[in-house]
Image (tube, rainbow over all chains, first blue to last red; front, side, top):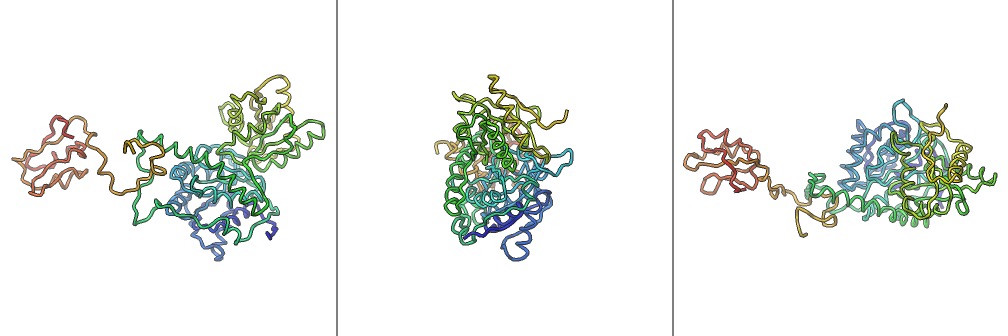
Length: 393
Length: 99
């Protein structure tokens, strides 16, 4: 029987990584991620985890070391946040392009300037085209479960891609919650050691990775990755079903809350989904038929699931902790809108940026966003634009 | 695979990884030449092999009989062999489609 333990969000990630029995961890400390790798360094130092812990000089090097280790066939983990992810940016593409099943935790942090260590999703959104499977956790339990299952998704032969588990800096990384872990024997059955591919780097079998991709083959190389990334949605569902059978906790790429008869639906990712459920309850108490669709998998984007879940609602309010400077709308809003373009039944969609740089988003604010989106729909408009909802005037 | 140099996305090894070592010999770098190619005057060649030692593309071939010839499939036409030959036995001439 699984033990219930009180654990900091960061350490929930560390525990999952320990249970996954990784071979190599290469990381550089950065707030608010540091606790994750600090705990892993302790595990290695104490002999609780038989892994190579590589202290590198930057996040660019952290990902480079992960790439080398994963190319040899090792099970690899790293973690970063904000500026660290930005410095890693170049290597994120190499990891995905070389089809290496690395798992990374990102304790989401606002990008500088101004110097801000607190949470929002601008770091991940800035690297969203990197070709990784991108998951967003809502609480410590999800951090644990998504991190552990990430290895199985990443290493699946139909996927072979890196997976990033996003967890909101501070709101998740530094908060202690109760979680249910699983026993090492159960993990061993669920997640056997990584199968080393024939083409893995080995002195006896020289192979060349990342050679010149001339115009005649670059399109095919990129398309291969696209096919694998799209396939990862189905694989993730399969892995999460198996994990659910083991733990009783079943996950999917999206998660509905009171959506059944909803007229207005919120779309959010990450820790503030809890507040969004409160907002839904507040609205329901006032007679507004509201609901929430939480996005757990951001890449590959769950277009079909979103369309299926929300085709009947009148209005959608996307509340995201990110924006797209000079763009049409924020990144999540843009993907939601594109998902519906061309659908015969589509709701009116409004986008909102909130929770930037660690600012709280109160349930009442989320409820306001839903009401604004509903008003736009009732005025007969399909497009509510994009609003920085917490800006002081 | 119908065309080795133009594989489909399914034919391409995962991530475009090159599985066999030493494959650069297959690359036809001879077509990088831009109009001039080196030609050896066998009468003047003294078989000192300085061109062989300097060629950056291993495109000078020493035959079994000790004579010297150029591998036009790989020679990029840089002209270093012409510069280093002490006997002026190599000159750059108009391309004749020998590559």
